[in-house]
Length: 422
Ligand code: SF4
Image (cartoon, rainbow, N blue to C red; front, side, top):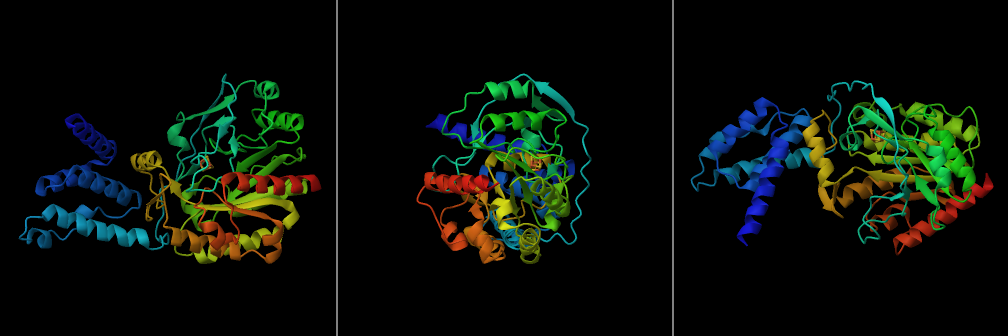
């Protein structure tokens, strides 16, 4: 029993140090002064340090500079630490629960890092989407994943790719085409996504990635390869096999400008999608991650309008809708990185082991964007919610599936039907 208590205590101390040691000196000094002024439990200290890391990212003042110390010190019951925590929670709750205000937020520019590109001799592994497997808590299409490129040269504030792969180095797989063509593909595999560890079009065909995937797609005409991008990189001087699907993540212009650093603008992404369509490829869009910010109700519906203005339902194999979701590990990395960003200025409600907006906020945002598409698009384009609570499906999309397998089968049927028409 004692060992368990000390284990928990040590974990708490480590979690605290993991964030505290990354804070700037002035905040660490203010926190040291606070911790000698009032008594806090380990978990309260951890909560304080996380909130301070968040305030720093949002470019808000430290709560140690805002607290009403006179009122706290006047308490007669001696529970001054608890009074501080209660005031801090109320302050943070107000910030987190309202729409994020970007009007006066100008984050420091993100320099374009000169990445070295290195071929690594490693095998190709087909992974699985990071959703909980066949969970009750999210509806997942069972996407298989492949990472021909690891690390990204873009700098989206909510992304953990930079933190999880070698810094300053982009890795590609050596002899990719040869390895892909030698791969034994299980007959159950029908849909592979390549945009998990980088942007699928980041390198264009500079390292032969697209040629290798083209050869693989030709060898497996019943396997759909989905390349997902936020770039405007024109790789469409020629066409691709019809089972290579190109998709773009789209976001509100405010979020692209303030949080998706170094990526292409909304206009550039849509123009690139038009080029792909004009060369005969099916295209898809991921309106993801939606952010609850002041102006979301105007900017997200305009994306729907723009898609319908430029594309017909026959051009599009799918439109997904999703939002910010973080694992504990990613939250820690973002707080350690400390880059100026307001993506964590949100209620972090736990769901399926991850943290995201409350369901009511998601329901409101997702419905607004879905309802902005016409009935024709609703009928002829496969809409889905990415990694979301199944309870949102009927309210947002007017349909639901009893299990992941049923979702996967319906997606497959719809994708294959669109592909056959090409
Ligand atoms: S483009 Fe994709 S992989 Fe690159 S930083 Fe943005 S979210 Fe991450």
